[in-house]
Length: 154
Image 1 (cartoon, helix red, strand yellow):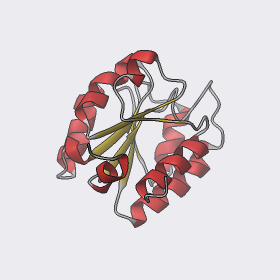
Image 2 (cartoon, helix red, strand yellow):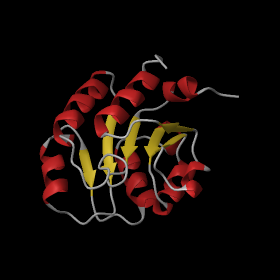
Image 3 (cartoon, one colour):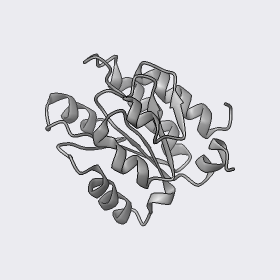
Image 4 (tube, one colour):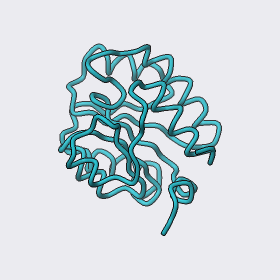
């Protein structure tokens, strides 16, 4: 059986859901600051970060996109199609991708990527489709936990 650390070794791109994962209970929790810090670290090891959200483009998505370090794809109900386009544009495939989502809408993409996770607050159906559950409840905690996994510190 392949370990989480072994799976992360092949990952080149990290996809994140926004609402319910990086934004819990509507709280932005200084997301831009933590996202920039995380993206800078991931860029330094040649790993891309992308947010895919079903949320319509709004002030939050524009603010996150203006960060410049992370691509934000909004109004994407078909997250598999959106991820496939990003992967194709970067000469990558689903075996090189990680995704963290929390709701039923996320399951198709979770089923396609090599490595999948969800927050502890995710729906039960989602938890059945992931490799691991992150214990963090804020964007900062989630980023820290994933960074530790990537660096093999967990």
